[in-house]
Length: 330
Image 1 (cartoon, rainbow, N blue to C red):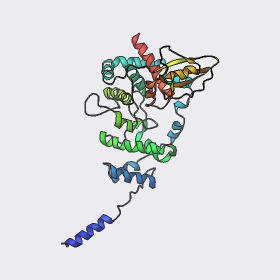
Image 2: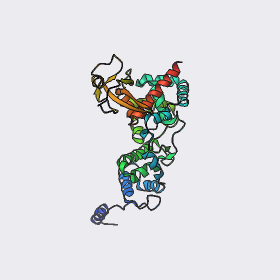
Image 3: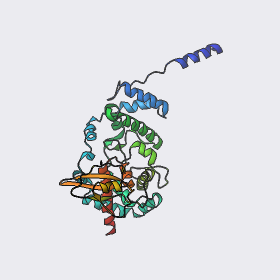
Image 4: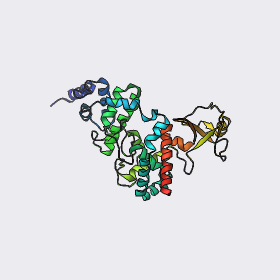
């Protein structure tokens, strides 16, 4: 039997010994010190063990082929090119069909969150063509690749990788089975992991927030996202502007409502007569093939850009929503 003092001394010695460092000996990220450091940090702060994480990371297949898509997103196109992707007769008809099939559910979601049904439908229409195209890239492998091999956005994707692992643990996902977009977005509404964790709702009350094929949860989560980002019920989104032929705009276009209506008028723009001079507005510039269109974006337009930080995206969602709404009224 070990004497008490000797036993205590051995215990102190064991505590003082450094833990064995993680070693990643297999896979595309083997012997990567930065990856091993992430594993060690994640193991200390989550329910995953070193062994579980090593096994997961050992199976990662590098997704560097996705860098080209990241470097050339559709949002870098001009408006006349971008709108052709999303404002199609097929997508409009699909939105009308989707709304009719889920009319009662959309009514319930709209009533709870005060976000218009047409906006919710348009988001799902733009993101995944109403659930048809959810992405085929392995989310875990994609996030690992961007986190450790794409320096200009490494901080963002490292955070999303951590969020995805925590999400998978909480939701009991098979980490390696989840597929998504080239940027790691998931499900019908294409939520990134942090958005999934913060804004997904269990709208049907079955105990799980399922954004992959559960329509109540999908539509409720989109509406919750907009409400949490400041959607103003009953308020407009945007309206077109006219510009006098001799005007040369000196105001800088952008997504935020950075100007007042009086400033836009002074710069040669005109629009609906009922707008108060102190109304905050964003100046939206849309390049057409044969000229430029200008729009005024209100707070709700800016809220749409929180889903995707692009005025082209927000305008596509808004215009698609209006065409779907018009189709529902015909």
